[in-house]
Length: 190
Image (cartoon, rainbow, N blue to C red; front, top):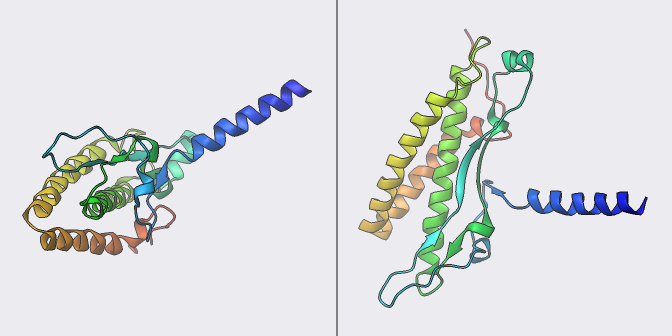
């Protein structure tokens, strides 16, 4: 009995710590220095500060063929998240700027999570192949990478260009409100 109780405690501890490893994108959530828990690399004299946001776009589903055939909305299966334990930020006089840049990175990831959800909803039909999403994922990922380069260029040009770019990202996120993770898109009338 004692062994079962210890096994349960161990399982519960592992499960709860595993569940806390990821921080999902949430509207209004702002990254802070505390979100960057990994040890940053040592920078050389004269090198600027930098950061690493261990962020990813995840799409997972597990269901029977019958469930898959009847499922149209995959919003809850697409997640934009980062892992604080693997993210780092070199602190210094530019910390606030780096935090804004990291936030923009995270918001860009959510924008493309919503674009992916929108495409999945539009393209999925009852007779779709279970791998129907792969081409869409590749296209969304390529578009997001291009947009990330544009974001870096805007930030390098000036703070005002970077802020305008971030405002555009937030505007696009708002325009895709029905494709948030918890949302159910409205059905199009035929």
